[in-house]
Image 1 (cartoon, rainbow over the protein chains, first blue to last red):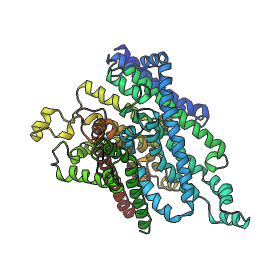
Image 2: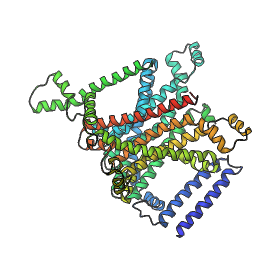
Image 3: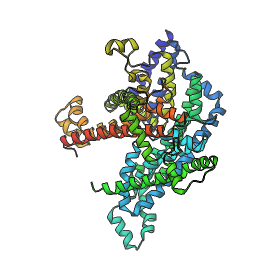
Image 4: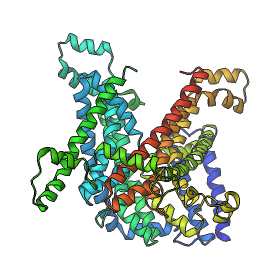
Length: 281
Length: 306
């Protein structure tokens, strides 16, 4: 009972603080902008902890965050091994292969409007399909190790990336291309000096979407078969043993890895496309 | 319309590549079988064999179409080998999750737009959640809800009392729907917040000069101008729901639905079955998204927005 009362009290206090902060005159400062969601997140964790303890929810149904935190810290080596397997071997290699293949394809079909008009609708169509379903097939083809995960990732990221790059390459206007023409810049020179830089924001948009897809693809493909390592493998194995604290620790790791992956691509974007209006803010 | 020829060309090229790849990937088996039977196979025999194997590495397109025809048209829809049977199970989970996920997403977006504290607290998390692989929780939700008891849409007794039997799609529906809802929720929140904020300052000012209340502004300006964003997020949400339903079928019991069909296919090496299930899932996704597109076109036209 005490737990429940304190949960309600914490919720009320945090709510009051956040409303005050959000409506204060300082709300446009960076600190407040970080503080408000941080308080919200911390409150959620405390409420979770309090409710699980107060209602005596068994840990095989929902472990409290403290238990998950302890498990996370005590099994860092396992989590790291899984991260290497899923993110660095599976997701990252597939991401690099898939994205560069898509960019190269986009440049190859750039000179043929016919191919573009044919490939874009097909690409858009395929991008909306449940491509993750190819995972069992690719696991059969490439075996249980990271190669099959990389293959799933390649298939998943290729079309969104292709569509974004083609759109990006169309982002220049006639005036700019005419200027290049006046400078006697040929096709490749124009591509290098004008159209590729102008395509960067769209390309990075695709690259950012692809980070999430890559991690999902690599992780879910492990549900279909995996060596005894990897986040997807660990999740399905520990779920079977009802080791839910480990599952949650793994999910925490996946969330951190996903945010870090996305964040690093966003950081590269910031340094490379500093000139674009969306980055000058 | 002018895109039809290029699209057909691309599709034709893909099919040709597919047949060629089927020869390349299946010929090892053909030659192995021939060597074991101590016979020579000519080139045409080899090609013919690679396109007609029972368990090819890569089935040829016509084999998949045959399997689809067999399991969609020829089987009774109540049979466990019918893809219609498995498709409706996946569809039920997808739709239930989609409806709840998008409704919750729209309500949260309305709250975010009208309440600054909510906006500043929730929005960063909603955006951050798009970078994390939420699908990872699918197996856990399934198992936890199983151990808690209720995974059927209606209990067996209730369903029998109403329908006289328990419809197959209701069995184990809830965890799948929860995951489908969870996956469609965040894209809808982010999309709808953008949409409800899309009216520009001039329009908002105009309504202010009319002394319009917040709710009046919402119904007369914000909601109508968010329609294009709504449809875009509905399409994203629908695709996400379907992926969620399929992935959660991998760990659900009983093994039913398109996802389960892929899983059992991969256990028993039934490659044609996997591909047929994959094509059925793709058709389902395409149909659902196309239906939303159609409603989008009609309503935007009637609203004078296209």
